[in-house]
Image 1 (cartoon, rainbow, N blue to C red):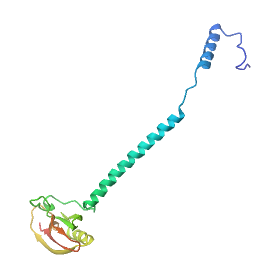
Image 2 (cartoon, rainbow, N blue to C red; image 1 turned 90 degrees about the horizontal axis):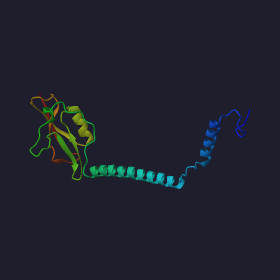
Image 3 (cartoon, helix red, strand yellow; image 1 turned 135 degrees about the horizontal axis):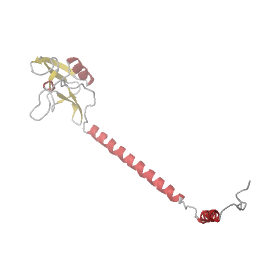
Image 4 (cartoon, rainbow, N blue to C red; image 1 turned 60 degrees about the vertical axis):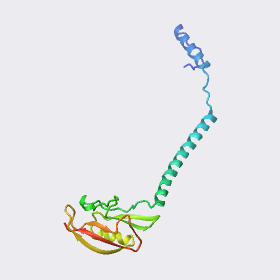
Length: 174
């Protein structure tokens, strides 16, 4: 057995010897790659800082929108079942407000409750949760609505009902 440092056996052709010499010359003459380690670290830190700043900006913008919505009254985030039909959703006043939407609270600190299509039991639960009193409950014949569902609330928006106030409901009789 011969090691790599030994001379080639005499059985090699001149072409093989020339090829081996050319490969050794190339391996000895190739420069080692030059890495700029501090530059790579700087770029990585800069990219990380920009990414963190972008995420922080997005969170601030989203949080600012949430804060703005809460300052302007926001919307009612309570879950409500969908209205059973378009007729059951109540009428609309001339200024575009729905007859089933109640605005609760005081100016600057209010929320809305939409009773459209709800049954009386669920409407009572929402009133209790909003700290409102149930006034009179009447029925009105309206075509195309589910019997027993809320068709109108009084007072409705844009009038404000203070906490502890009374709300009258009109139900569909069919």
